[in-house]
Every structure is written in structure tokens, then in C-alpha cells.
Amino acid sequence: PVLAEVMRAVANTVTLAIAAAIIGFTMGILLGLIAGYFRETWVDKVATSFAIAGVSVPHYWLGMVLVIIFSVQLNWLPAVGAGPNGSNSWAWDWAHMKYLVLPAITTSVIPMGIVTRTVRALTGDILSQDFVEALRAKGLHETGVFRHVIKNAAPTAL
Image 1: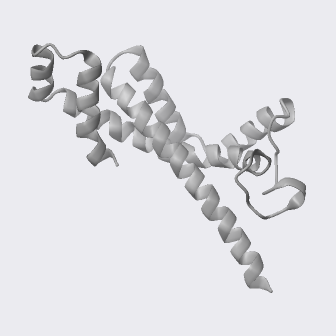
Image 2: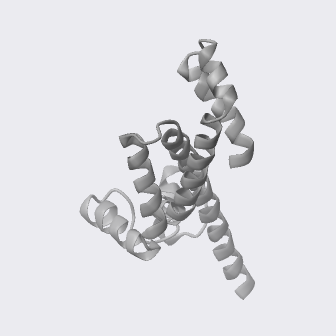
């Protein structure tokens, strides 16, 4: 009888881990590319500040702040539970997913910060290479240059 309870908890943990990884890596790559491309500008400083805050802020404190804001004050998301009406089953609908939002965001901030800093450094290294200068010299628009930077950064960043 204990195995069934443990497996439900494992399933919830795996679901949370996957959601947090998707959010953390997606936001980290996006912020890192933007920060690396706009180095030494206010955009870079904002993205780097998010990355540093993501690594520095304790999970438990961020979780409490998010619960206070989005559950208690705004009443948008539930504060506790794994499903509506105390259910432990999972479904891909908003009634179940809203229970995953706050824990997934809270858990994703550390990977987001690490990935942002890594991708920012990688993007800066790629932008300093000779082929980027050659692309600009040939008259390629900046969106095309950015596309080439993404193509060269993607294998290493992922």
C-alpha cells in the first residue's frame, strides 16, 4: 500500500522537475542570447541582474513571496495542493496546471540564472569571432547576424 503513495509523489516530482527545467532552460537561453548580443547595455544589465538574482535568492523565500503575491493578495493561483479538490491525479488542463505554476517558477530560477550566464558568455565569444565581422562587412542585416550567432551557440548551449 505504501508503494502507490510513493509512486504518486514520484510522478508529481517528475512533473514538477520537467516543468521547471523547461521554464529554466528556455528563459535562460533567451535571456543569455539577448544579454550576450546587447553586451554592456541596459538590456545586458537587466538580464544579468535577473540571472544573479535567480542564483542568489533562496527557493523557500521566493516561494513564500510568490504565494503571498499570487495566491493571497491576487487570488490567481492556489497556494497548496497537487490538484483540484485534493486529487493527486494529473491532467493537461488549467484546473490541474495552475497548481504547478508557482512551484515550477520557484524551482526554475537557479537553472535559469546559470544558463543565462553561460549563454551570455558564449554569445559574447561568438560575436567576437572573425566570421561575424565578415557577415556584417558583406552587408547582412543584424537579424541575419543574430541567426548565425544562434546557430553557432545552440550546440554548445544545449
